[in-house]
Image 1 (cartoon, rainbow, N blue to C red):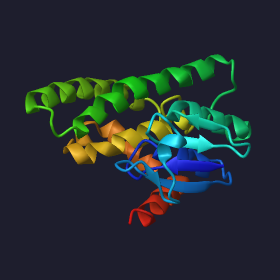
Image 2 (image 1 turned 90 degrees about the vertical axis):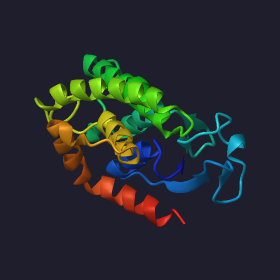
Image 3 (image 1 turned 135 degrees about the vertical axis):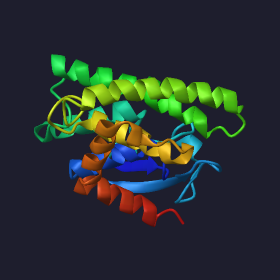
Image 4 (image 1 turned 90 degrees about the horizontal axis):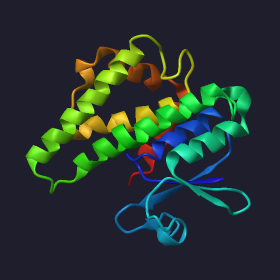
Length: 203
């Protein structure tokens, strides 16, 4: 498999999942501005949507969209319990969290990267985001991970997008349970391996 990624983007989530599952894969870096891959290809011919992540399978099939990719990967090794069995109530709950992260945290924070947005608009976006953080704080004050005691693909995704807060000068210390949650995930060997691998390829 090949994972097309760009540092400091949502592609970190499937990267973490690949390492958690100890699957064999190749990293292919994408320049988000030029849409060229590190091996010289036009990324738009790989993913016409133009953004990472994209996962290329051994048979040449391409899968895009982070929540779809991480669930596909988790089902390759169900014994690792990164996702509950398909068709179960617990799987629906996982999908509920993935959708929440996509629409409320990922989409809500990504807009803050736009330097052309007026500050009053950014302020409104932050206020909405903080309300979502309050919900996460309440959830994580009662459990170690989003769905309970065990790390899942939803946690890999949430950890990834919360990492962007440092670019927006958002201090997560105001949400202590959320801060402790990030620290727990930071300690995972697969997470550290993914961060180191991406940092070493940023040049």
